[in-house]
Amino acid sequence: MTNLWIGIGLLTLIAIAIMFWPLLRYQRLVRSEAAERQQQNIDIFRERLAELENEREQGTLADEEFATLKLELERNLLIDAEDQPAPTVGRTRIGQSQLVTVTLLALMIPAAALGLYNHLGRANDLAVALNMPAPGEGQPSLEQAVAALEQQLANDPENPEGWYLLANTEMNSGNYAAGVQAFEQVLKYLPEDAPQYPSVMGQLAQAMYFANEGRMTDSIRSQIDATLALEPYEIAALGLLGIDAYEQQNYTGAIEHWRKALINADGAAAESLRSGIMRARDELVAAGQPVPDLPELAEARIVLQVSLAPELADRVDPEQTLFIFARPVGGRMPLAAVKRQVKDLPLEIELNDSMAMTPQARLSSQQVVEVSARVSLSGQPMPQPGDLQGLLSPIATTGNAEPVTLVIDQVVQ
Image: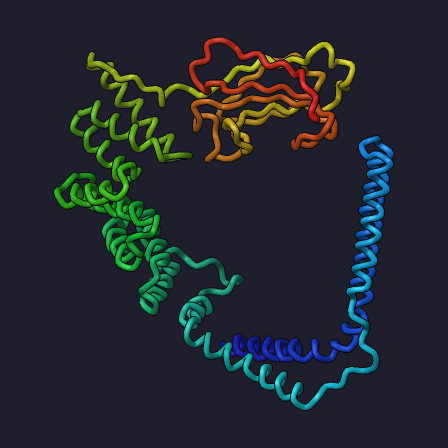
């Protein structure tokens, strides 16, 4: 802790110096301020005049309009110059009252900082961190990390983020009973109107289920019901209902719960739910029972046949870059992206989830998308004037029996 207070003292001295420095520089700033503003106005005038001359040379601005706009620029420059205050002449004296004011403000900095730190600071947390093994002594074990976190929570129990971290640590360690207790503490201190509240309730139900060795009880079911009353599509709660139905060989019920959970799921959670739905479907097939339509299991894929319009062939080079994208209709974030060259045209390519930019933005997350192909003259993904492109929208992400034909036949303006 000694090093902490030494650091605080040094930072305080720096803060005091920062308070006095502007006062010492005031004279020079006053002298240069007017000249800088005038130079800025001149630079803006020259820049705008160059733009007008460029527009006139390109034929987008008539001579009469050019003369009028130029006259207006010159008039504005003169008005700005007349409005500038005269530079301060002579040296600005630092009076006693100014010096006293700055000194008082400088002394208030450490006083206010120490007061705020005592009220809002995390000295206990810092002590916990300082007691951890040094980097040269090796990384702390899981037990040491949990003990440090528990000590932190003992000093600051009203910390839902800390309790949540502890709950997940205990769950990952297989200590489900401790996970239940930690999730209960999260809900105790987390505001009920917080967007994470239903999710934590569902995770508490899940911890209770695992702590009871995977057996459903009335208390667990009550926790699930309370969760779904707040959020009907909460993933963990619906997942538990699906597991319970599957264990009772109610495969249709399991599919219904897991399909509902899949609405809000993505990434690994979505893949796990789809896997469960497929297992329940296979059980229904094996038992000769009716199988519901499951569009969620349809593989998201689009087979594209991309070609270049013959009339644009002389405007491209074989080595130029070709980008192929699938995006949400009207959206900008690509769900699938491919980079090729013009010499690869015409080509046939399949867009699927393996080409996603992020796990959360995948082709399977949308029912319909827009697909585009663009020859980039600059080699950059962002469109530029002169690029060549083709666009199709909307295109279904599943159920496409035949390839989709996309022709690059437009010039980006």
